[in-house]
Length: 276
Image (cartoon, rainbow, N blue to C red; front, side, top):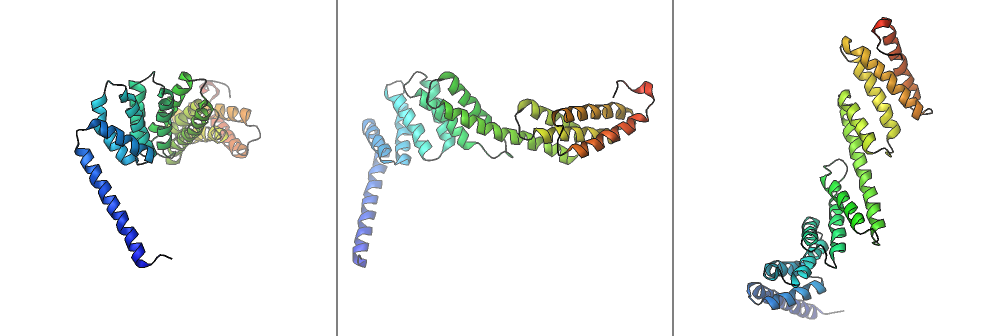
């Protein structure tokens, strides 16, 4: 085992090396030697020191605008932020690269990576999904632009994953209207959810909740609106049992159907606008 004096000596040497390194780095930041900054930035990048590499590149990138080095520096800068898990800045710089260098050899990778960074930024379903939608759009653009890329399959899988998240967001938002007792808004939101995500795993429940919301909306309506809305309830019942004839919700659906029929039976025949 190392003695205390040996440990102290090793620690002292480490501190000394670190201090000297920092001193050289601080001097380099103040230097006007752009070639040296470029060389050292590349060394830092290769060594995995992405913080120092990015800082130096940020300093010299404006100097190299319009030169052949500009694309290389822009791409490395975006990767520095990606490796630092700063996905907001990484996505920003990959986006800049795609815009500024659309025909560069790294354009394909940058197009994928900006979408992937936004995918990593995509929040849980209960939160705003602007970033999720942006990532989906960017992955779709990648697939369209590079249909033969080996990453197309991965991009499609990530799109499907994010669509599942949007699906949950859509369902939760509609369910919130239902839980609040705003049945008119709930019906609209549930229907929109089915249009946007016809493959949803909540389809049976959504169909049932549209039926239930229709019944509750009719039941709580003023008398002059009840006739029309109970007739709509019957329409929703028929649509539900046609699609899910063996549903676990069938008994409750039958109760709404029979209740709506009883109400409609009390209206004079001439007042009914359609058969039920």
